[in-house]
Image (cartoon, rainbow, N blue to C red; front, side, top):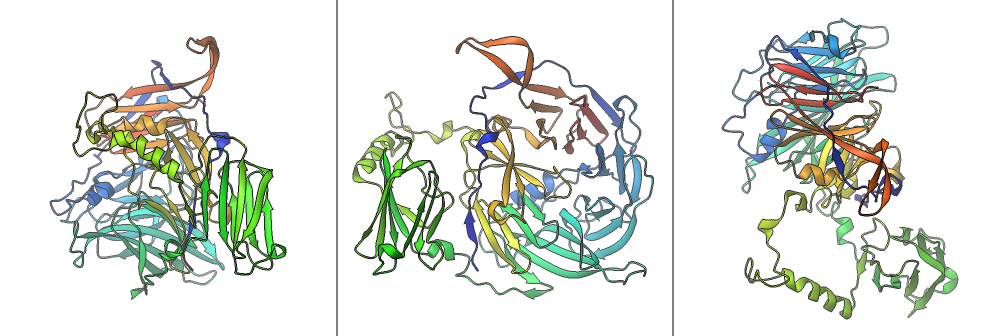
Length: 585
């Protein structure tokens, strides 16, 4: 079974076409600081870790971890190998971070040493890496400020190569407690003759309790799966029940090994969707759309199954699944639309657009099996419009009214990801991708945990906005749901050249960015204003204003960690943990 193409469905009700801009607020954000007993040591990349992928995976690692099960509780690992936890209840009386576990190995030693990484698996379990290649699964008990229980390691394994933990989940399957852990490595690839000579490896490990009921718990590795790719994924997470995996990356990943055995690769199958002949052709004018669908030879009108509404179409043959079915790009007038059989082997459909003028970029949302045919008049008009953008010289004649496009004048916000950038759902049983979204025009911004029982959300840029998407693997018709929007944040963040981390509050009340040093920016959702404001240009009253605030930390140390809760923003440096009170309730 080949992967099916999928399109992200934007919820138009969550967009604000009237959004103008963020207004700078001079209101100070209350900032509190906790001085650390021991430094958080940033692991420097070695000379052998010289590629962009090494920098993305390890150089930009977020050393601060937010506990999604316990509000305003953060954790980090210091240079002594201690896992420290801080839960904030009163900002003006911050306590010292308390030790919950200590690694037996000394972090920071070894030629290939990476940073220690942590993943909160459930409300009572955690996964921990020492950065040298050893994986721990720890029973934490109920965490939080009132809990002073030391974490108990119930599973430990030396994997042989250093890694960082990307994600982990805990679930019960057929009465057996199982934990799924996703590890990331960058390995030297001797077969790679082009490029950097390195490959990216994702190892998906399933660890289960093999002891019976009432016996002492004994956890062992039940299954190992390895995926290989050429780029560090922006997003990678395991489904809550461990049935699949979702990966967003600029280069595709494939399963290569299961329990040490190679996985057979079917070269033709992943490309099946793209190699399939077009099943329909369509062209359009400002007033209508003409669609020609291939049908079995000798088709009669009695055998045609045709259903048309204002925004959906379904075409097929009686007794068989629909050939073409889905949501139209825009609304049409069903009463003014017609269809006719041509040459007993194709169906020609004329759809009357409800709104004249706008040209459709696609016919059926997410369907890539059709070919758009452009008329000679449209091709000539398009060529005329693009003439001013093409020249053999970089800027042949800058004095004319429409000078050629100069790529050196493009801003960072005009740059799109590679065309191969995709969001893929993998089946853990089939070991193959089942659904693929092309994200070539959607820049990845950040990942955020909204509900600890669900998969982490990912935020993507759509035009100038930033849209938050919640993966829902149990809903095949809507696998990725649009649940929140940050107006113009996609454009705003592109102007921050020194941006290091980005995040948002789990309730979406604000989004925040931070630079490598000192400064952080808070962008709030529009809220009602207490005074009467008018837009002078449009002559209308403004009811809501979106505020932007800037906070500057009193430190010259680089920012190593950055997390947000509904009320607070946490920023970690090597010597301090800063707490910014963003919301009062």
